[in-house]
Image (tube, rainbow, N blue to C red; front, side, top):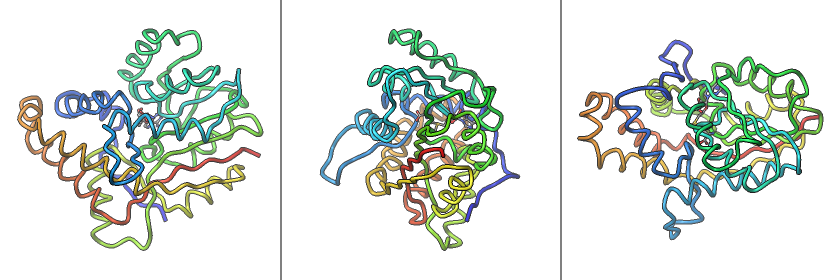
Length: 281
Ligand SMILES: C[S@@+](CC[C@H](N)C(=O)[O-])C[C@H]1O[C@@H](n2cnc3c(N)ncnc32)[C@H](O)[C@@H]1O
């Protein structure tokens, strides 16, 4: 089962490039260490701050990808390049990151230059639906919380399979839907899609079937829903704490919608979160 929106506002680039509220709200995430993804906490007693917990999620993805020295890695939906930098610092590989946001390309390039990684990192404006790379260009790929944005997940998996060489590794971090989905769950899906430029959520069965049909084998799925669950509440609390500042820069209805949608999301039991790794045939 895959549910979401094709008719709602799905201007992802505008969401990430955006001005006003979204941009200011995004700065809170930047303060979380520049990772635009969930944190990972070992258990309820783990009091790691968000910047540590979000790096931990990156580290889990690095483990799953396990790139070999000299390999060329594709980062699908690279954000501002923080996960890419961590991967490059951990492994002697090269990386190309793509994002649908021009401002993220600039930030990722600046960040790589400041970290002394520019010789191994390239960041480009590109749509994952139509990747500007020849067949067999990469040895590994990851998509860290980007596939819920794309208009057609299967199309991106087909593109990923096309640009990867045989036997390449793929690692994905994404939300999945637990089915059956209640009416309240559907309302939460619609609201998240409208508010955060999300296109769709898939059930795990749909996801793994799509991966298999595009030639990915040896699928390994790790359900880390409980470990990431704290993220939404922390984010909503952080936004709430600077609500007045956010409202100054945007409009109050937009700010409140972001906070409410995030809280609703975290309390909707149908949303799970998985790390998936696979190898291309
Ligand atoms: C939630 S952010 C995650 C960023 C990064 N992976 C991280 O973990 O920090 C989603 C990313 O997906 C990118 N994205 C969304 N749709 C895309 C598309 N069609 N093609 C390329 N990138 C896309 C966004 O521009 C953004 O960089």
